[in-house]
Structures are given as C-alpha cells and as structure tokens.
Length: 439
Image (tube, rainbow, N blue to C red; front, top):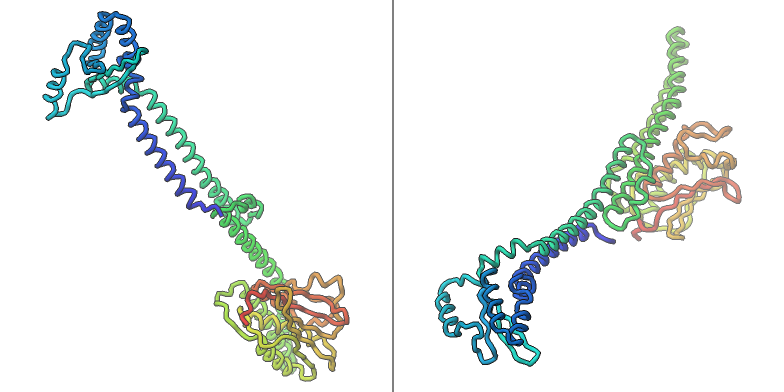
C-alpha cells in the first residue's frame, strides 16, 4: 500500500534537497573561475585575441589591447611565458612584492589564472587580478541566467507542491461532502467508490466510511421501520384494553370480575410485546466484549428449559461436541432459543426435534429442524421481517422471534438460513465463521 505519510514525507524532503542542491550549484557555478573567464566581457576571448596579436608580431597592438582591458574593466593582467618572463612590462619581483604587501590583509582583488598554448606549442600563463568591487558589480548585473535557473527550480517545486496539496485536499473534500450527505441521510455508497480503490490511507478511510455509512443508513432504516411496525402492533392490545376498561366502567361488579382476567392477559401480552421490541432494539447496541463459551452446555440448558414448557416433545443433539466459540453467549442463546420455540410450536408430539452441529466450508453450522408442516414457498422470503407472521398458522407470537435470531446471528458476522427440509418439516440453520472458534 502506498502510504500517504511516506508520500508527503518524501515530497518535502525532495523539495528541500532539490532547493539546497540547486542553490549550492548556482552559488558555486556563479563564483567559479571558468564561469568568470567564459562570461565576463573583459576576460571572454581575451587570451585568444591577445595571443593572435602577439604571435603575428603586433606586440604594440597586443600591449594596447592589454591597457584597454585595464582601463575599461579595471582588470590587471600579468602574462608570463614558459621561462616566467613577463610580457607585459611588469617584472615578477614587483608582482610578488605587491602580493606580499597584501598577504597580511584581505587582498582587494580576486586572482584568476589561465594557461593558453599557441599553434607553435608555446605556452603562456595569464594572471588576472579583478577588484572585488568590479566583480561584484558584474555579477549583480549579469545574474539573469542563475536567477532564471532558480526561478525554474521554484516553479517546479511549486508544481510539485500543488500536486501534493491537491492529492490531499481533493479526497478530503470528497469525504467532507460525504459526511454532509450522511448527516442529511442522502448518502450513497457510489460517492466514494473511486476513492475507495486507492491504495493509501485515503482509500482505506473511504472504504471504512462506506461501510460505516451503509451500516448507519441500515440502522436508521431499521429503526424507522421498527417504529412504524411498533406503532401498528401496539394499537391492537391498547384498543382491546380500552374496550375492556370501558366495559368494566359500565358493567356490574360481577361483569368486572369476569373482565379482570382479560385485562390481565392483555397487559401480559403488551408487556411481552414491549420486551420483544426492546430486545430487538438492544441487539445493535451491544457494547460488551466477546467471550469464550462452550456450545454444548448452552444447547443443553436451552433444551432443559424447553422440556419444562413442552415435556412431551423430544429434542436430540447430534454432531460435534466440546466446541468453544468466541462471541456473545447471551445473543446466541436468544437466537437458538427463538428457533427452538418456533420448532416446539409446530412440531407434532412424538416426533423428535433435531439440533445438529457441523463444521465445514469454513463455517460452524447449528441447525434446528422440526417435523411440522413447513412454510409455503411464497412466504419463505419474508421470514425474519419484523412483525411478519405466516398467514393461517399459529398466531400466538408477534413476528419478532426470527427477526431477533437473525440480528443476533448477524452480530456474529454469520447468517441465518430458513428453508423447508427436503424430507419434510422446517429447518433453520445458523452459520457462523470458523475464525471465532477457539477449540
């Protein structure tokens, strides 16, 4: 993954290094002897011109050219042949005395030497002494080339900085718009699909944000649907309570005594319905840490509880035993308990309810099968929806049992499959990821 940290870190270091190197090279280049010899108007082509005049015998013209250079550019030039004989009239001893006089102090000129060889193989040494005032004035007036190079370098650095800034601010703006849309419940996952494909921190953040947005919208949608369904389901018991209370107010003492069991029954139904609704609402708010628990003892306890409710029913556990799982035992217990209660409701007496535990295809499967009539194919797809009850079947429940079981299984990153068994009856299968199995 291309880390944004290293991209920013590397870009800044590259910019600093590039600026430092260019500055160093420009300063060094601008002060090198070769640069001055090739670009200063008083030194450029001076040696070649003087040599051509001197070797053609025009010594007077060569001396005049030398004096002209001194008058115009204040450059003092000393020319020596191979025998260190001065060709400009100033003896070397005088030059040495002059330099010795300034040796204790900073010399007021810069000394530059140049060797030149004639076509006859004769070599000459040219010693230039340029006053620093003259050299500085020329450098300031002819700094266009180095400054141009520096401006180009700054332009390149500006482009790099702009691209780096855009690579950071554009994804942030997309995320900001996504947050704004999520706050107004108009967020769509496709908004960050392209950003989520990046292989850096922004890609990971966009992917996580998509997951969060999808989950939040799902929770909001579920809560709205739950609120609508709850409002509808609460009307019936409340209406019956109101009717019973109205009858009790108008009736005699004997009629009131007959109505009290009905009022108590309606209150109990209303209390059970509210308990189911609260259980469903709390499933998405589980904050406790996962813990390890044994599957078989949990199933055994549920079967013992079911035997108290339906002592004439037979429940058999088959498959893997002594299995430990990592999760929320209360949620999983509630899910299996609801599946067992559904099976007890529809299973004929004398036929066993089968609870089978298998481990295959990277999943742990816990299936609960009854021998009842099953469910018509047209209603299978709606099983698990809040407050849905199959028409024509036992209507004692509220249509929340399978919904609670499904939410509890999804909390464990699993799936709940509801189908008719090929050999008859109904089978509910909980499939959980094997990654949570500890033994």
